[in-house]
Image: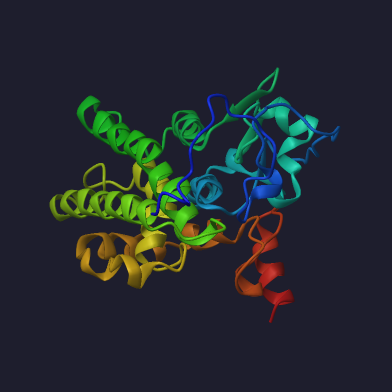
Length: 287
């Protein structure tokens, strides 16, 4: 970069203009609501307010996996939060998640209802509530949590780092793309080496570690994230590919990907879920 175009930061940053890029209209340096809006509440114990981004898919997959095991108490209403329209800044949503990020959950099976926000917290809450997808043995439980929290710390480099500068930024910056590409490929190598040792991330069992990581790294391996499969040469990570395809074939994962999905093929979208029969109705309507 030449000296003529190099950005020199001021002594004090001020918010004077939009940042540019795909999500410029919703980026701001302050928290809190921008408008009053009460969240809807349906008939089921759990009320989920979300969108089918990778973080949102984690939770809908978890719910569908629990229902597949026969946990009727895991029925949920899924309400669509259109983040591009700023729904996450409504007063009702901010009450559930003061960070204004999806997904956000209210558990109405208890009194008073409990709010749960941040996808990792929601997965852990549901795993402990229903006694599923989190081993009880201390060593296996800890290994599962290791990989759950690995995802929480690593995925921002994939999403906010690589994804932003590769797919969403108003201009392509070589340094930024190179920096985050290197890190994402390192992360894929971390996963590939782990999955050479075990079937799933936590060991031989499918757990919340896989449910958390797959929507990001599994879908990246399947070239569903940022259209960057060729650029990243994701096919080279053979163990990640095996793991990604195996989880992708699970019926609950296929259902979970549909919920609150507003993009892709119409048959893969279910903008809001309020009953298990919605899947069948949605498929029939789109034929």
